[in-house]
Every structure is written in structure tokens, then in C-alpha cells.
Image (cartoon, rainbow, N blue to C red; front, side, top):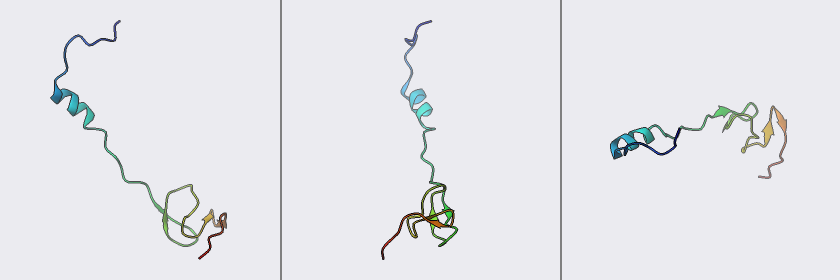
Length: 60
């Protein structure tokens, strides 16, 4: 079995195959402490807490 293609793929076939590579919006959840939107399973950037515990102290 060879890796080389037998025939040339047209630009339309090539581009329609690549058309399914779309970016999706990041999944956001509300912080359980301050209510700000954050990415799940990460420390909140607004209050510095994770799982209702302060992990990073944020100076204001």
C-alpha cells in the first residue's frame, strides 16, 4: 500500500475537506465565589479562588 495519491485532488475537494476546521467559543462557567465568568477547572482570574477556596491572593 502506497502513500502517494493516484489522482490529483481538485481545489474544491481539498477546500471542502478543510472547511470543517472551525474554532469553537470557549466553554465558560460562573465562579462559585464571585459569579464572574471563568473557564472550568481553573483558578478564577477575578477573585483568585478555586472550588470556593482562595488559591491566589489578588491585590486591588
